[in-house]
Amino acid sequence: MNAPVSPDVRTVWRAARGPAAILLVIIAASVVIALVHGTGTGEGLDPRSVTPGGSRALARLLENEGVRIELAHTSEQARTALAADGPATLLVTRPEWVAPERIAGLRGIAAHLVLITPPPDLLTDLGLPVRADGGTEVVTRTPDCRYDRAGPATMGGDQYTGSAELCYDRSLARMPGVTLLGTGLPLTNDLLDEQGNAALAMRLLGEHELLVWYVPTLDDAAALPEQRPLADLLPAGWKFGLVQLAIAVAVVALWRARRLGPVVSEPLPVTVRAAETVEGRARLYRRVGAAGHAATALRQATRDRLVRRLGLPRDAPAEAVASAAADRTGRPGPAVHDLLYGPPPTGEAGLVGLADALDALENEVNHR
Image 1 (cartoon, rainbow, N blue to C red):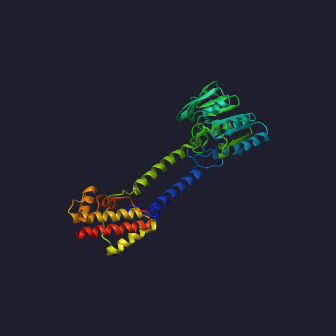
Image 2: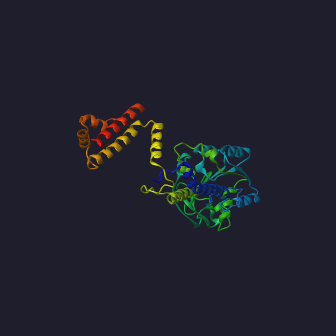
Image 3: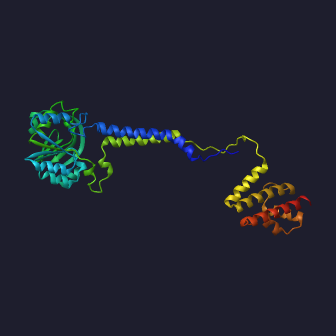
């Protein structure tokens, strides 16, 4: 008996449910960790978050100095907050998630706009006389500009060139009404108490009594131009997590994959009579209407027996078998060849007639 090589649905499910459960647990854990802890690199900058990447500590310092903070998650909320009172500072933590025209509209009503790592195309759309160069290491850097009183700060990331006041090795660019930061790490809970980060943050964001803290969401990201790839909207931590997940899936697939070896024979668990096997196969042929396949099996069995009876080799050509059978029975050679090697019959009646004709030919060969 040949071992089955095509597993059924139940077998596939039993083999796959373990890795599938592990994969679901990994995805769920990744989502929970991302939602609870953010990216962990300071890109979250949520003023309510007490995680290392949040900015709750800075928000408390600003409020203690009399700065009122309005949290906004959409451009409409930011616009409403800016229009409510007098001069205000607008901080945009993820400007790459906001359409340039929306930031341009907010810039027109904000007294001071602070952008953290804005994309290069946004600088062009806003008409700013600077451009962003490649990123650099985030380390302690000295100001060499109006922020001398703040002292050294943890700066780096994007570097800027152009007609602007450049500070901290060009990782901070100051223009009338606009400030660009190459990194948001100095504003995070994790690094706020190091070097002059707190002093720098207070000077940047405490200039006016109202600070609109704009943390964009996917509502604003959905309004970005269609040519922006989805990868640009994902934080770096999510990209790294997706790569790790793809590697894990590949490893599990290789671990669980099974090679299909050669067909093997194994003893039957019970003894099945040959007549039952023939009847069962015949019923299968009849159920699917495989008259041609059944005729091929009948002809092959008849040819095998005739070859042995006529003393021919097992690989004798069709012409030799038909000629020897015709000589033994006295039948015409073409008729015998057509009976043994002809086209398949059509329908059950033709199959029955073929079986009778083959049986008659074999009886004639055996008795002459």
